[in-house]
Image 1 (cartoon, protein in one colour):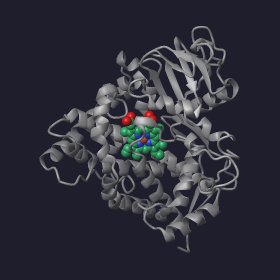
Image 2: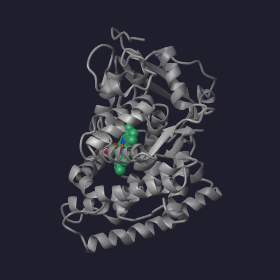
Image 3: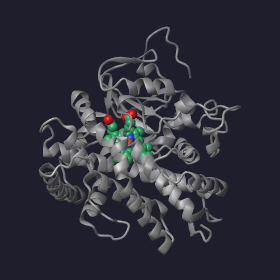
Image 4: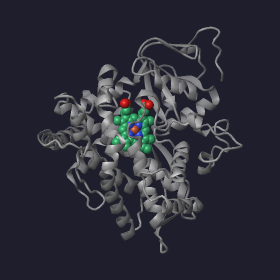
Length: 451
Ligand code: HEM
């Protein structure tokens, strides 16, 4: 619904769902369905509406221009929701994702070289070796749960990239670091979604296990950091070395390096594995797209080169299922959004998914059609409205690595396997859980006899 800017509106003037006394809309929100609920309220109340959660007023924005404006207005005007920083901080992982203000600005400047193209090119042989392990594993035994397999893959890739540690969850299970990480992710997700930080008052067995896992991980990473400090190569082989090389003098403390390593492990894993899982699901329903990828990778084998069709498949899959559809922001100071006065401290949810599913931005929006990213001509196609990696100064720095992983796995899979959907398969449901996860996803992976 277009908002009139002729007089200043307040958040309470915005349309929005009717809620309960005291609790507001809290009882209507199921954490796993948050993205769906916010989309359907958007269809009902417009591109900017308000929600109430207990005492907190929340503005939900789904307009692509406003979204970009809000995301651009950082770190000065908006920050990530303050609960994110405090939860990460008490876990010792207050790094690039959760830092704010000047601390974030300084860290971003120091960290960005670690993600640059040269560093990624240097990492390519490791990526190839880990992708080959996945091929071998699927060759030996058809995967029952493709999503779980892809999670193992991204754990291996991010641990290798971050601190040159070969977890190798693809070939063995029971690694100590893997066990720590498996414990940390679900508890972190739970804490980020909790309206009340109970663990600061009462520790449940899971919370105590988390403390132990973090202490053990800190010990392992501190040893890696000490090695990197005493033996720093000219060209970094991992993220910690890249950070140390980027600093001018001894700027990073061990605690800061640990926070960054953990941040990368957290930010880089579920996002990428679930993006790949959705992509393989779409391909399984589109044998012609699998064949087009085979033909393209036969012509352009290196994932470091542009592979237009494969990249279009990735863009199309992330348009339909962005794995981070809601970016939770908070106004730092009193501000206005499209003529609505938004007081400091108001939560602003930037919905980056809705625009990608609208016919005025993408014709036949629910159809998986990678070619729309390649052709010019009739039909709506507004790529700038889909923001799967965010936007503005805090745009995802891991996009390059994520695309390399996506391209490596997809080209390996199409070259060596046929993907198909079991005839009785129901479409997976999408659960919001830090990233949007496909649950109940069934994909057949059959080795190809003709390479
Ligand atoms: C398909 C995979 C991925 C998706 C969809 C994704 C998405 C996002 C999004 C939406 C943001 C927030 C951007 C914003 O606030 O404007 C973000 C931030 C971030 N991502 Fe990713 N990401 C992916 C992979 C990765 C990988 C592989 C890494 C690291 C190896 C990574 C590291 C980060 C970090 C450190 C931030 C915080 C940046 C900052 O606040 O300055 N991400 N990502």
